[in-house]
Length: 173
Image 1 (cartoon, rainbow, N blue to C red):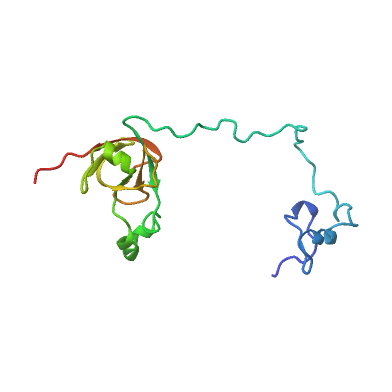
Image 2 (cartoon, one colour):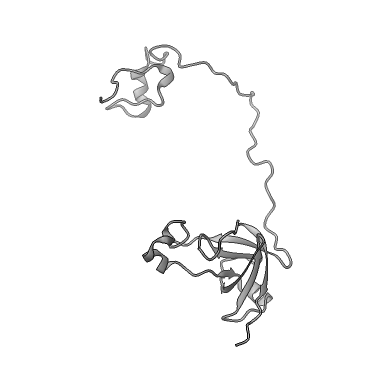
């Protein structure tokens, strides 16, 4: 009921551990002699051999640095402590602390779009068109816009993606 207390076959040993022994020192408990083979024989046969001293290339196609585009913004998700996680926003207390949907823009982009306080921005991204208020964020680079991730008011956005932004027409009051 408490498990097998004997020594497992070498092929089934996922790690070496013995009570009272530190890290690799416990390996001595599993060997027939110090520096020798494991008790019970070899743990298996190596099927794939490495290719000599050839260096592995993990990142051979590194993209270039971000370049702003005329008339397009790279829309990225902005994660918030409250509301960005898919289930937390369904809790009443957390939903009260969640932000409302908005578009975050660099102040220079705000000037470029001729936006004033209280104005809305019309975004078109992933075939979805929305009108949202904007917030100036000095930490965002020029050419990048952000929207809160995971909010119920912004479904269907697969970000990051390129978007078109324009000042929304004000409705007559």
